Every structure is written in C-alpha cells, then in structure tokens.
Image: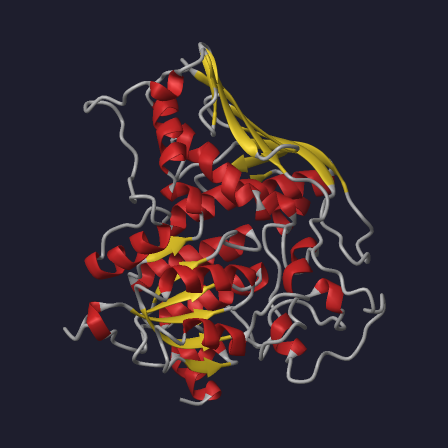
Length: 427
C-alpha cells in the first residue's frame, strides 16, 4: 500500500482497523508467537528488541537511520545493526524507514514503538487505526491532549496496550505499593519522588558544530522531525539528546517522572485519578538554547484527599510517608522491617505480571486481557508531569479538574495542555 493510500484509508489515523490480525482469523504466528514490527531502533528500541525477539516473530524493523556510529559513537543502533542482532531469531525481518509501510502490513499483529516522545501520539493513533496491538515506551505523550487522543484511539479500536513503565512488573515495587495500600504506614500523607536534575547529555560528538549542519547522508531529518516544528539539523540535539529539548520531550520531569510518578499513583491507588492543584518552580535555559528543558525543579501536586506528591531533582526513588511511618520503593522503612510484612489473602493484591513486562504484553495480546500498564493509567501518570512543567513554566499554582481534564480559571495554562502538529500529521 502506498503512503498516500494508507493515509486516506486510515481516515486521518482514526478510522476503523485496516487489517485483520492473524490471531483473529485463527491462524497463529509462527511457532504460536505474536507477529511484531518494531518502530525506533535506538537505545530503548535495542532493549525492547532483545526482550521480544526470542518470544515473538519479528516481521519488520523500522528506523530512519540506516545504522552507523552516527547514531551514537561507540553504539550500533539503527536498521542494519538491529537486523544483525535479531537475525538468529528472525532472518526474514524486513527493514523499513517509513512506519506507515510497517502498519499497512497484514502479517503484523502488534507493534513496539520506541521513538522520541513527539512521535508517540501520531504513531499510537495510527497503529490503533490499523488494528495493531501496541507496546509504547514511556513517557506516553508530549502533551495532555495528545495523551487523551491516544487513549480514545486505543479504546475505540479495542487494542491491547502496554506502556513501557517497567516498574509495574517489578516484584519489589509491587510489594511496597501493596504495603502502602494496606495501611502499613498508617494514613498516607505525602509521597516524595526524586528525579535526576540537569540534562543527562550522552556522547556529544566533539567535532560537531554548535550551529546547524547538513544531516548525514541517508538520514531523513525532516521525517525525524515529523509533527514537531521545522528546525535545522544539529547532531547534538538528535537521537539520545532529543530528551532535553521541549519540541520533542518534557525533559527529566517527564522522562523519569513517567517511572516515579507511576509508582506514586500505584501506591496511592490513583491509576485513574489526578491532582486538584499543582505548583512549583524551576530553572530554565533560554528557549533557543541547545537544550531548554528544566535543569533544576521542584513541584507539588495536591490531591482531593489532601495527599501531596512532591517531585524534585535528587536521588532517584519514591518514599511514601504516612501517619505511622514511611517506606521507600527499595524496601527501606521506618519502623524497620515493614517490607517483610506478609500481604494476607484478604488484603489488597496488585496486578502481578510475573516480573516480565514484555512477556505480559505478549500474553495479553493472546488472551485479550488487561496489561500491567494500560494506556489510561499511563496517561494519568504523565499528566501529572505535564502539569508540573506547566506550573513551573508559568511560575504559579494551577488548579486542575481531573475528571474533566481541564485547567480551572487559567486560560494561559489551559493553552499549554496541547500543541499543534506539523502537517501532514494529525490526531
């Protein structure tokens, strides 16, 4: 199917499924494995390929970079290296540069999306419209409105969805959250989430100019930008380091907030809720700087029952503080020994994915049951991070209606819940 035909058939990426997956027809994938296509073959894409390739049938691989040390010095990401990596398990995996060609394939049941954040919404919406089940890396979205559009698309198409919030499949994290939910620290009062500060810049190329340069041969920079604003190519703002530019990411607040706020909500029992007020402060580089996400930050999200989630840069982790003690995500506590406390059969038990996040997704693709990290949960988690960035950017408290997903009484803040997508990309 040609690209134009795919877009027309998809009806702007929100039409009914284009394909009927093999499982629906009663035909299993080879060796009863889910047939998958992987989109994005950088750092997270490599990790996800390693987790999926022995248990799923890898049909196609998609990345804009043909694969070389251009991607990151000393690393071997991109199409050719990832083809070689999965060759022992999937010799016939088709290399593609356009994700729409991958989604149009009728021999693919599910996709794994490991792209920069600004691509998540268009790709997830398109994948759902194409009838694919979806594993998408965290953070789920670039904006609150993008996230809601993703939820609606996945729900409408009845797709299985797993967000790459791997701590939902960590036995220790689950046990800590169960202890909190079952009152071992008394009434929950405050949750403290620590995230790294600054810009975790990796492998700056020493000879890369600080000014725009031509993109490398064979690398479609305009396609990489996709729905993001038009911008000149800079090596040191591409691939890994896109995380520190607001056109493509929310910085550390969303990159690591996706993990820590997810655990905060799990322990609080707020998987489908949100705060009512958010306020904070941050230090921001100039908007036209090479990297412009917050370098230091602290914000507090207050919930309707008075529980506060305090997010600041510092040691990574989560601490739950209650009226009778506290417990960290690593199991340390006061009083000591809380982690050894048994969760009794009649108490609250949280979703157990058997410490296998990707395996849980594959199992749910076959069973059609809910995953450990469904899309509504991921959306509610990252909404808190987005609201934190908005409050810190404006330098004032914002009031939030979590049911309506609306800012209350602040038009300027409300406008930051969304951002336009560059043509032809739409939700």
